[in-house]
Image (cartoon, rainbow, N blue to C red; front, side, top):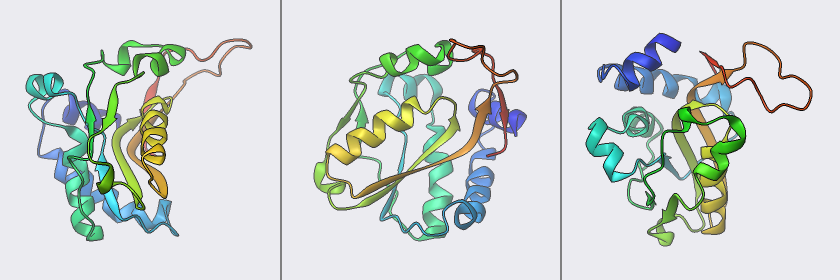
Length: 173
């Protein structure tokens, strides 16, 4: 999975997006047997990052998932309004600070009284998911679930008093 994520996200192998999103759709009920979201919200990219990368990997994963679940893919309700450096550059403790005021609800009426399935490519510390979940709940979402293609794990357990090694490997969720 690690190689697929790296090829997709950084190697620009865009054909992997629909395939990985379809795989996520096939696994949705395994991970979320009781969830009935009202909409799918891919983690937004700032417009500068989107211009640089030319695609939002979370949108490419979310499209086949939305199609399979017959749910709307919400692309306008939440914006990334601050061009933050990549989370991969930060250690665990700094990731939350990096995302402070990075997102804004642009259309609260699209979120209010709805259950949201947040889609992202990689779950590392949960800082992005937590920032967006808080924002969505404050905007009136009835619930937020997070579905990521992969998660990272520390190869070694953290030492007492530390927050993590800062070195992660990607594995299947």
